[in-house]
Image (tube, rainbow, N blue to C red; front, side):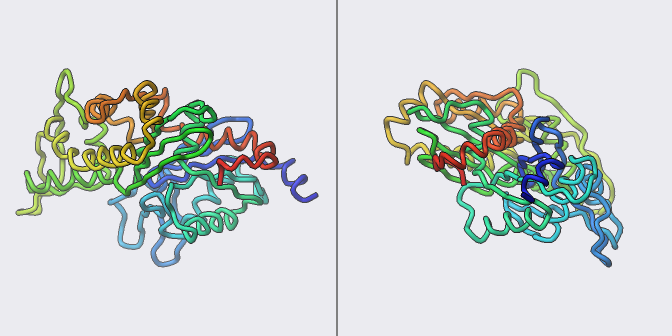
Length: 343
């Protein structure tokens, strides 16, 4: 009875709880929220001062009594209490700030996380106000969101490059045949840029500026027309402000190590995939999703390195949350059928 009453006043949600960004799908409305997974706190009182984009603008710019943090690392919860506050805020926000709402929530998780980490996710979402919580692994959600025919007896590979974690999975007959994950993704690319500029130019920059450089001139494959950008930071020797002119070729060199690690992960996954499914991949190729998929030239780079075609959906950033939403819309049917592809 209580579940029925709650359902009258709240919309069920699909949540892609990512290291870099959180996306929310609301039943009947589609994707309604895209916000950075950042929370600004008062260090003295623990009070939440800002969440999402407003908090991200504070990264690296806060006074001593304020700290802007990312409560998730490598795709899993690093700070249980802050994550709960962030999820509660997003639940209230997408329901037009109405209180006492208890939606059912489908939340995505990385492959290979431990049972303790799964329980931490579930407990955090329950504490944030959900009445029921369901988990779905991110590569499966991404495949559904990208409209891959996962129920067919053919091999399909999904490569999901997020903020803190990259995942590769081969899917056939509604299940993951092989899956692998590694904590090398968009954030590690930002750190690689920071390290390169520090070593070559003795220039210190923050994560926000590194991300801006990656988006503006970063690439994985040579551009038809290379770009340049002025990067501002602090010089190591003098501790004074300095501006350097950086080219896209330099940033491509800086990104070569994390990109090479992701390529190795894909190759390892292929090595463990049955030959019959590998043969399917020759025709079907790789579906590339996640925020990292937006790096310029990445499909061409992976196609060259892996020798497989690489397909990019119209909006690779939303594939995971769309998959969670589609699962949400058929939740009752799936629960009855218990096909075993969701967790």
